[in-house]
Structures are given as structure tokens and as C-alpha cells.
Image (cartoon, rainbow, N blue to C red; front, top):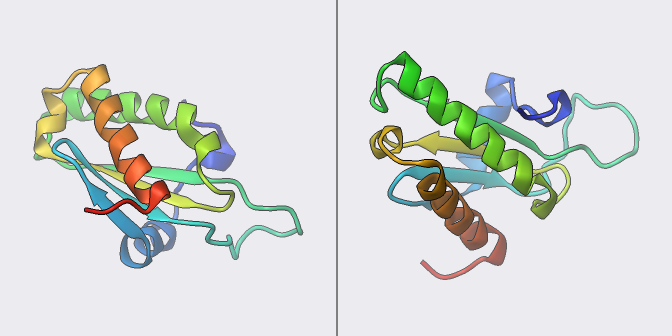
Length: 123
């Protein structure tokens, strides 16, 4: 489970990450990253935490499958939050094949997408 301060909840924050961030697509998911975006809602001078949100549509499967995919993605992102710059906004959108994928396949696609976004690698 992601800690509360690392959860992306506001619609505006999802929109900012998707519209203004970089995108990396993989066969099972698409990752949007708005690197180092400051949080206008957080008071104080400390660097805001990295926050992640997930989009799993009905195309992925029935409710049980969607919830399973979300749980797996939350667990995977929790382990990778330290790799991301402080204040980043991350949106992970699961594609229809994610419902049939196992934990290792999701991890592989998430790692590849984050490596591409963080490394600025070529397409």
C-alpha cells in the first residue's frame, strides 16, 4: 500500500501529470511522469513528496481483476518511489492486457517505462 502522502488524489493533479508530463508506453501499461512538479497545495519549504496515481478502466477486466491490477501496481510503485525526483507526479494507466499479466510482467513493464522516462532514453 502506498503511504497517504504518496497518493495522487486530485483530478487536477492527474490532469497535470497526463497533459504536461512525459509519457512512456509499454505493452501492459502507460506511465505519465511530471518530473519535479511542485505541489501548490502543500505548505512549507520542504520538497514535496513524489505522488502516484493509477487508472484502471473496465477494459482491463471485471472489478476483481481491476482491483488486483491496482493492488499490484501500488505495491510496485511503493518500491520505486525513491528512484523518482521529489515532487514528481506519476500516473500509471493499465492497458487491457494488464488483467491477464502476472506480477513479474507488470514489474518489467513498469521498470522499462520508468527507466525510459528518467533516463530520457530514445524511443
